[in-house]
Image (cartoon, rainbow, N blue to C red; front, side, top):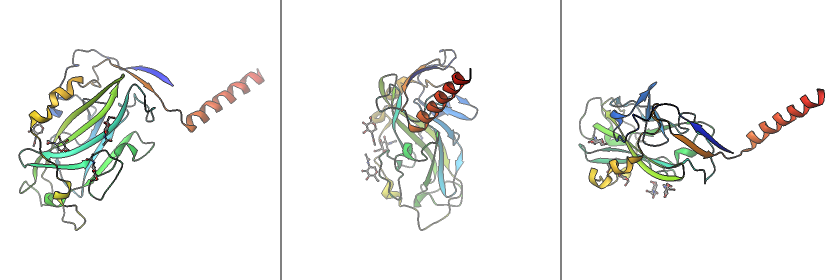
Length: 241
Ligand SMILES: *[C@@H]1O[C@H](CO)[C@@H](O)[C@H](O)[C@H]1NC(C)=O
Ligand SMILES: *[C@@H]1O[C@H](CO)[C@@H](O)[C@H](O)[C@H]1NC(C)=O
Ligand SMILES: *[C@@H]1O[C@H](CO)[C@@H](O)[C@H](O)[C@H]1NC(C)=O
Ligand SMILES: *[C@@H]1O[C@H](CO)[C@@H](O)[C@H](O)[C@H]1NC(C)=O
């Protein structure tokens, strides 16, 4: 099923921005340079507890159906998330987007909670982030770096959205915590990453942009069933008329 939807507004604010603190917040939601909308956490929040909780809307705030054809002109291919800090020299995998899931990093978050337009990431903090509050050792300022591979109106993109947080609340000790080493990746320089270039597509889901999203929805059994009920209803109405 091919549909065209329109997000109304002015194009004035449709400019490339690369940092979370510059992104538009509407009703507590953050637009990213991509199809993902971040419900939580908010930028610069002090975090702790047992897990890092991230809540992502993967339907462009209800403008995209959840199930799209593989060759849909607009769709999310995959999402990977890293927790990194230049000041602390760390770069941990939260999810690298692959189907496999081990104890430490999460699998393909698009496949979890099928039927739900919001994906709740709960990542067990690794051992070096344990602490009573405050910043010492590996605790302190991090970015939740959300990387999206997606197709927007027939063009493929890879974008980077860095959401700053502070790992400064208490994180309790637990033997089940993965080791930081097992999750560690090389830390690349901002020049090597070149987020500005990657993010040229801009924050196109800002409430003030007027982009149209062209997509092909996957026909599933439940929508076929709904359609047949509608047709049955139409036949019934015709029959009694
Ligand atoms: C977070 O990312 C921004 C770039 O998006 C960078 O300037 C900043 O240094 C990063 N913060 C940390 C703690 O690494
Ligand atoms: C993703 O993570 C899994 C589990 O840690 C690992 O086996 C796999 O090689 C990683 N894939 C990529 C593309 O980094
Ligand atoms: C994510 O999607 C891109 C584009 O389709 C693909 O090249 C890449 O291998 C995918 N990554 C993972 C981890 O599946
Ligand atoms: C963290 O590691 C991932 C996987 O290697 C990489 O794609 C990403 O750019 C790295 N982030 C930083 C800030 O170096």
